[in-house]
Length: 220
Ligand SMILES: [Zn+2]
Image 1: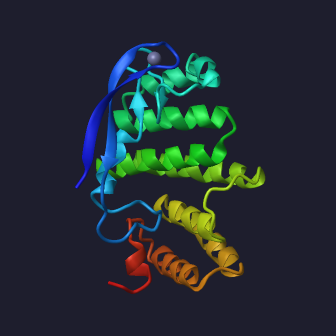
Image 2 (image 1 turned 60 degrees about the vertical axis):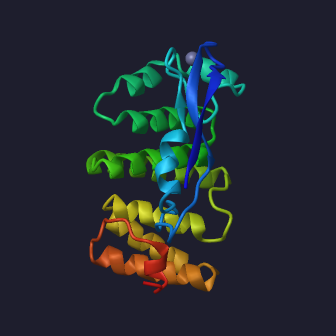
């Protein structure tokens, strides 16, 4: 089961104190999705992965942590537009706001991860079009991260596999198939080859749904 507590944080940007949720412990039963999204109950703790200051709308995984860049970034019109955008579910816009801050600080790998988290929120509330935009955003950020040698996943081929999944779920089938072929030519572990082959089947079926790793490796 998941254990949550409320804790007071002082916003590093504006000093406002607010109560935020922390997860002390959780569990997960079953298989991760192909993009590594955890199963329940961990899956549902996503709302506690990000905090938004109720006063200045600074979004962070830790509102109290020193971040002088954020003080400038959240004053930008682009940041304010993200916060003001009512078309995006609020939790997703918090992740987008964090992703924007990370992007401006040149943390492209982390920025991509936050954009993927925003996509997951949209998946949960069936905002498929917006989820697609967040996946496309994450793909771009991962491209920049790669150029700058910023690691996203440690295991060889794992970043490519997540990118393939992002592309497939965004309906970018040609790009996804190209990356499938590229990844198959890399020296990757047997289990990753199974995942690449499974992605290829899904892409050819034009299947844009979430699937699990256990499906891919034949445990189900
Ligand atoms: Zn604040």
